[in-house]
Amino acid sequence: LKARMQALKSAPPLPPVQLPPDAVAIVECDDDPLLLPPIRRTVHAHLDAGACYRFRHGGHFPYIARPAEYTAMLGERLGLADAAAVWGTGRERAA
Image 1 (cartoon, rainbow, N blue to C red):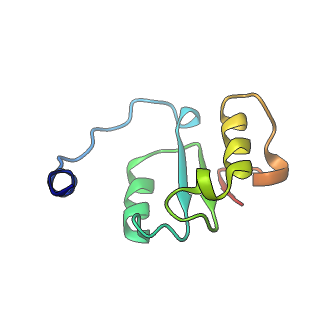
Image 2 (image 1 turned 90 degrees about the vertical axis):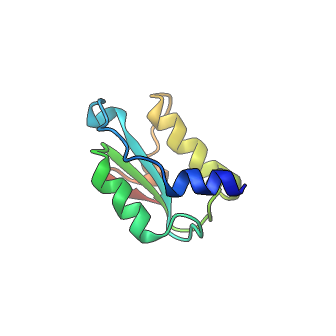
């Protein structure tokens, strides 16, 4: 565990993402105890994401805490379902 934490603390900067914005989505949670707002802002600044799915609650594991919403998001990203009833539309979405 200590080695993993050291690797995270001393990791080199990520290279630029070579994908179009529509192929990139951010999944975040307002009450994530591990990824605090400054880290989330850094992720947003680094990625030109076509969509951001923001869970208002769900902790660090929203796929466990809110499986229906997470499954709806995955279905939409994979082109299998329309999740507008759950997530709304637009670049920034929240459930």
